[in-house]
Length: 202
Image 1 (cartoon, rainbow, N blue to C red):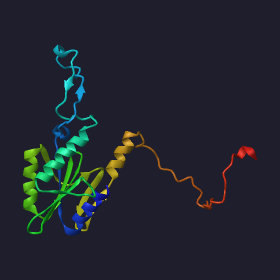
Image 2 (image 1 turned 30 degrees about the horizontal axis):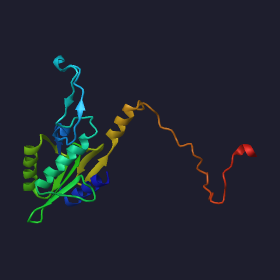
Image 3 (image 1 turned 180 degrees about the vertical axis):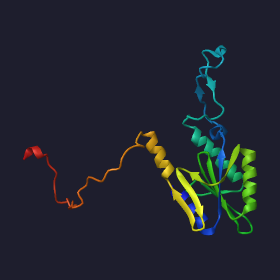
Image 4 (image 1 turned 120 degrees about the vertical axis):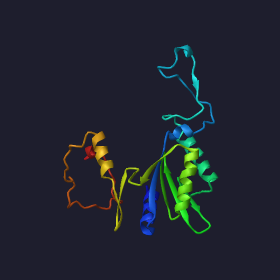
């Protein structure tokens, strides 16, 4: 989450545009290196009764899927000439000879791109489309539970939708707020010289 806020702060400071892409069926792009077998789906051809399927590609729900997909994506980005951040491996960036910079951040199948190099962003979109099936979602509006709004004053972030969705999932949407039950006059004391004992002894 920190790297997302930093990237948005840089975009706001320098006036860079933020664009979002979505990778369709991201996990299916991951090539499995180990042998993984699965039982055929219930509606599979009955002629294969008693047999199992050997997977060649990762599937959603498979524990190896996020790792093999990200490995494939990272290799593709490096092949395009992008450097991978050592501080956060989900961050990739590219410097052009003219001093322009393009930055890409990926979270599962969501991608944020910001840059001051329009030509490189166009080329990046074409390269990604040739390697993966991607959908251009336009200007960044929602990412990792964060709503992004723009104005002349800058970029504004909100997690209102995320919180409402969370309350809806937990059945607490109609709940009412309550004040804290902590006594405001309560004082903390240093208990370094105290020993807690069973009150039944006294």
